[in-house]
Length: 225
Image 1: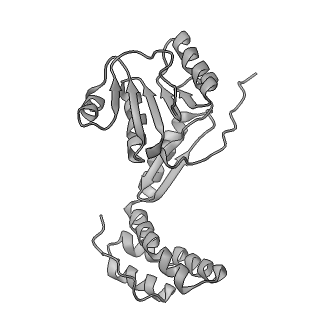
Image 2 (image 1 turned 30 degrees about the vertical axis):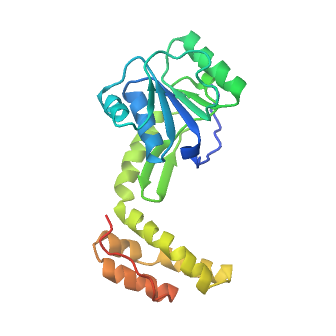
Image 3 (image 1 turned 60 degrees about the vertical axis):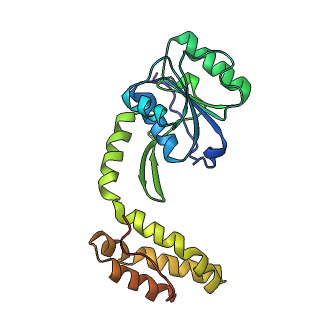
C-alpha cells in the first residue's frame, strides 16, 4: 500500500520577530530556510559546526546568532519554531522528542515522521504571499508550480497591494458600510488596474483607482520598485 498522504492545514505565521526560531544545519538547504525566515524579520539562531558561504556572510553581518557546534539536547528550550536539516536517525529523534516535549513547531527536512508542520514552496511579491504544497506526494511539482507562478504573478502585484495597503484607512473612513467597501474593492480587483501597472501606465492606473474609489486624496508615488 502507498504511504498515507499528509493532510496539512495551511496557515501563515506572523510576529516571528518576537519569536525564537532555530535552524539546525549549515548547507544550502538550511540557507533556504534562513532566507525565508529573514524575509519575515524572524529572530534566528543557527546551530551548525560550519556554514556555507552565504550563511557565513549573513552570520558576519549579524543577521542571526550562530552556535558553532552540533545540536545538543537543551538547545531548543524557549524556541517557537525549529527547522533542521536531516541528519542521522538518532539526532533527528533527539530533535523531535525535545521539540514535542517543549511544544515547539518542528520540521526535520525530508523526514515526515519527525515533523508537526510542513512549509510550502513560496512565491512573494510585496504583500502577496503564495504557498504551494502537494501534501508530500510530489515536492518537485510544487517547485515547478512555484516557478510557473513566479512568471504569472509579477511585480505589478507588489505595487497594486502596496497601493491597497495605503488606501485601506481612507476607504474605511469614507465608506463605513462594509458592503459598499466590498463592492468597490471587487471593482478594483476586476478592473484593468493590474494590467496598466504591468505595462508601466502607473498614472493611468492611479486615475482608475481614484475613479473607482471616489477618493481623490489618493497620493501614491508612481515610481515604486
